[in-house]
Image (cartoon, rainbow, N blue to C red):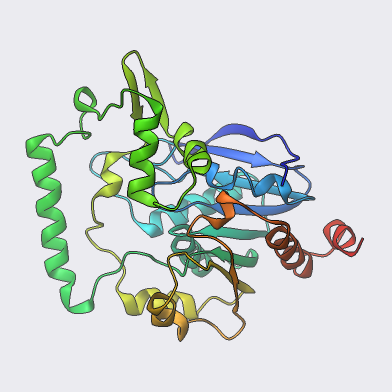
Amino acid sequence: MRSTTTPKDHPLDINGIEVAVRCWGPEDGIPVLALHGWLDNAASFERLAPLLDGCFVVAPDLVGHGRSDHRRHDSGYYLWEHAEDMLSVTESLGMRQFHVLAHGMGSGVASLLAAMTSAIASMTFLDGMGAPFTVAEHDRVQHLARAYRLKRMVQRTQMQGFNEPDVQRFDDLDSALAQRRERLDTDLSQEAARLLALRDLLQLNDGYCWRHDPRLVLPEPMPLTEPEACDLLSQIRCPLYLMFGRQGAFTGEAFGRREAALPPQAKVSWHPGGHHFHLDAPDRALVDQLLRILARHEGGVLQRLVNE
C-alpha cells in the first residue's frame, strides 16, 4: 500500500529534555498518539501512519531512543517515566482527548498512561500486552541487586558503547541492519529494519554508530511485577483493542498468561505477520480496522470518510 502523507519532524522541550516528534496528517485531524516499542523509534509507524486518512498521528521517539535526548547518567529508564513524558507531549500539543496506538513496549507505557489520564478516547495495542519486562514478586530484591551490580560493572569497565570514545561503530549500513534485526526481530524485513535504523544511526567519518542510549539494554532496577502489570491491564477503562501478529510475540502460552487480566471491553484480533506486522506490511484490512475503531470512538469527519 502507498503512503499518502509526508511526515514532519519537530522537537519538543519536555522538562528540559528534547523529545523528537514525527507527525503525519492534518493538525486538525483525529489525534493519535503512536508509541513505539523497545529500541525502536518513531519510524515504527512510517508505513502505517500515512494510511490513516483524516488522522493527526503524533509519534515521539521515547526518551533515550531514536533522535530524542538521553536521560542524565544518574537516571534510568522506567515505563512510568516514559508515560509521564508522553502525557507532557500531549499537553504540549494541546491534545485534550486522543487515541493511543502502541506497539510492543509502547503498550506497557500506554497501560500506565491510562492510569494517569482520562483523556484517552481509545487504545489499540499492536503485538503488545502491557509491560514487557516484569519480575517475580519473590525476586524483586535479588533483581535490584543484580541490576545494580551490572550497572556498576559497566561504569567501572567502561563497557563498549557506554562512553563516547568507545561507541560501537559499524563499517557500513548493512552491518548495523544485521545487528538490529538479530537483536529485535529476526523476522523483520530488510526494508523495515532500514527504516528503523536510519532514524537511529549517526554517520561518522569511518562508519556509523547508534544514537540511542546504550543503557536501554540494562535491566530496570525496579521493574513492575507480573501481578502489577496485570493489574494495570485490568484497570484500563477506555475502549481497548489488541491486534496480534500470527507469528508475533504472543503466540501460544504468551497470550494465555495475560488473557485473564484483560478488561471486559477488550477486543482481540489476529493478523498476518510477526511482531512488527504493522511496519513490515500494513494491509488494507488492518488500516480499515483501525479507521473503524477511531471512527467508532470519535465520529465527525472520519466517520463520514469510513461510511463513504
